[in-house]
Length: 171
Image (cartoon, rainbow, N blue to C red; front, side):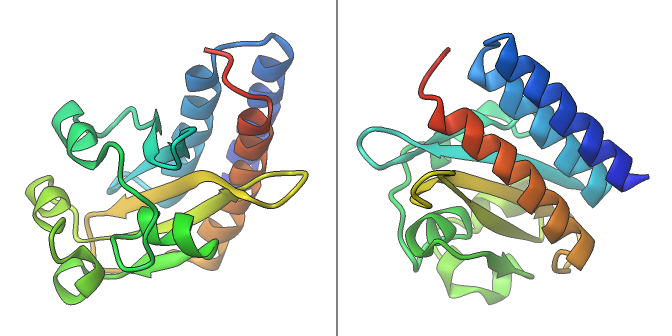
């Protein structure tokens, strides 16, 4: 069932790319699929590196605006959160518990206030040159790490997101 969800999302995203739909619309389609795979107690988000090398919201339809404002313009840093760390290292970063992870020291109050316990993030890498273009993050309301199936699903979705981001900024 989840494989069909991912396949349908990728097909829809490819259609939207062909139609030159706004980037936000395409990325939101991919985020919705990630949330479908991770379950109802999760929220997904795509952050995109801007021209200054800072993380900006690409698509986070189920995160509140005040949260997005608080994390806007984070600089990639291997010692900060999951998305900033994934953007800095180019590797998957998992935080089972915000309370137990020092990378969340100054930021943990933000997701905890929304009822999230942990998160993980996968870098979105360019199709041509493998440079980090952004991150695909998932927040959990339970202390856990992503399943192998979730990682593979997000890897597939991140590949489509990379195509979108490689195309440049078509609002």
